[in-house]
Length: 201
Image 1 (cartoon, rainbow, N blue to C red):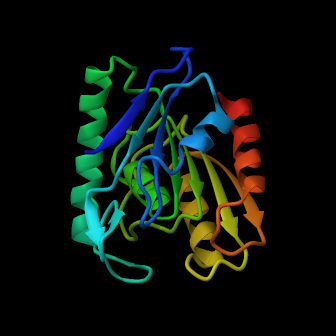
Image 2 (tube, rainbow, N blue to C red):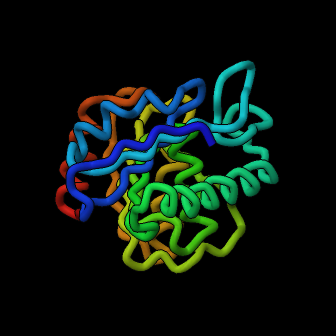
């Protein structure tokens, strides 16, 4: 997978896995990582799927309707990539915190839904429920921060509420920050994510 790895100054800190939104690249969220933890190593990944020339992490059938088969395949692809990257760059595979926005937040949530030890924690900006009707792995010890918009036209409020319930039901510790700015990623929610991160890591 096309990516950027940036070695941090503090190897004890989590590796920040950056996952962009639709049409983004591995460069988009680098400024976020700098704000959240300037000492942490960064692994920023570009999605392998193109939708009308725009990079994404998995295919969708329509707005808000995921191609479930592709989602499962791409989630495994990303999980395998993290295994390989941890060896290549010599970091602790069990110390990864994802920061994802929109489509990137959805693939991060899908990692949590499918793999017990994929992530130590996740910051999900405007996520949706990746899959329904499956049993989640035991997520005890996993911290999740969700930033959501009360009037988000792309990701309805109910999605974030349901996602919170599902993650909590699997044992994760979840914090939710509500914003009034639709689907955009705001500095306010980035600052809230930073405060949450500092509290937990």
